[in-house]
Length: 63
Image 1 (cartoon, rainbow, N blue to C red):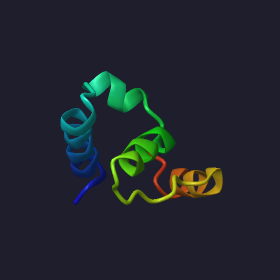
Image 2: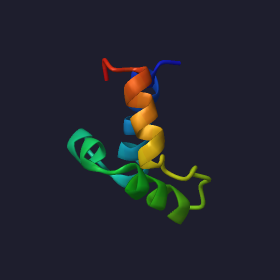
Image 3: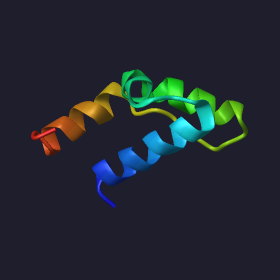
């Protein structure tokens, strides 16, 4: 599954579960999304650290 596939699926789930439209999903931080998932009893991983994001940017410079 590509990042785009996973993001699209997550956006759809956020719309169904939380009533979010695309703008709300893409404006939210991973921590905000994780907090909502945990609030409804889901298992959300901890958000990425700044170091992990920096490493991913270096590894995948095209975004």
